[in-house]
Length: 498
Image (cartoon, rainbow, N blue to C red; front, side, top):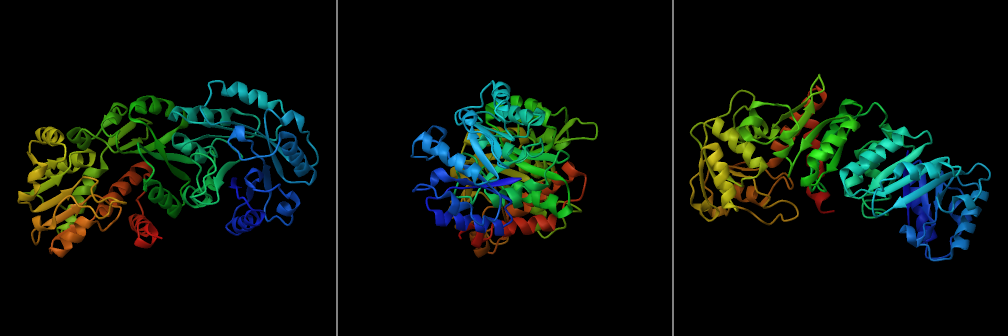
């Protein structure tokens, strides 16, 4: 069940938000009385409450906002119990002082905003002695492996345990805890009202991750990268799962560059079935997969890991085929039959992970590739690897090309007024392919259309590479038109600039 935390300074606003949440389908709400600017009027807050509630009054030492003294706080908690609220949250150091009474259930809680301590099991054992109905244990993740330990604890506990990690490194555990038996996860009223680090909104939990449908049989997929804050992969994969009625969830796993191998070994216990792989892990991830396909061998980078029928990890690069298909569409050809790059001169801007995949595809299919990168050493290294030309970034405008491919982040949201290539360098009829998908219509593409160039956006490539991953993950055809519609709706100007 999703518990939505409400923290407002006025009683009226707390009541209104509670009513709003009930209308939106919330089944449990946490009333954070410590946020109120005046002494809480508990009777007013719980009268005619539209959903069950958890009453919480968090102290300053626990990152709460309670300004009164401790005796007053505990008196309020006892009053909540006497008045029959559904749950009270009691920190483990005060739980023994507040006795059980009536039907109110006891959530015994422990929070650590600094770390996930090594003695989690011992802390949990101490909490189990305090007459809990639910144990709540929430800690800060300083490494992805911290949430693995937390989820194992949740799974192994004989007492219902709401356990997850705070922070971006632990965010996935807020979603996955439901698979391992957590009776609750917590969310905020809206995206801009985070009450704890890494907390997701109610709408994200309910609609994006479909938390209430997650169970022990739910298959887990995710994206590995750093950073991941603006990744739209969870949106399109989860919407595709829902569209086809699959019991699966896709979550972001932020993994720092130096933690990849350790993290993947620890993740084995979570039985994750597949990963999308993004910056900065596309090369190092190959050390994990015993089986790689031809595209990965030629590119030297993978964007997809998945388990085959025998349980072995396989690696591939779906950017490779998606880019070729996108360029063929831009040239007016059918990408399902052949690619028409032979003899065409392709100027590629950038030399990163996506550029490696696209460059390999261009060369293999007969294109004449020239690479320009703001880092000339990277352009030279990639050109030597692919057996093509490279030029200085400053000279890119003097280069004749049939196809221009932007693999840099220049022009990506929010810097939508930037472009990596001046419009007077373009010529009528050339194809301009921008791998950026947010926004769909970049400044580069706007300029290209004004110069009567053919264009293709990064949305096409993004959808096609994700659709190819979906097939590998699930063994089912991807609902590609549905995925395209969902992404376009998310990236619409109204959505980006409310």
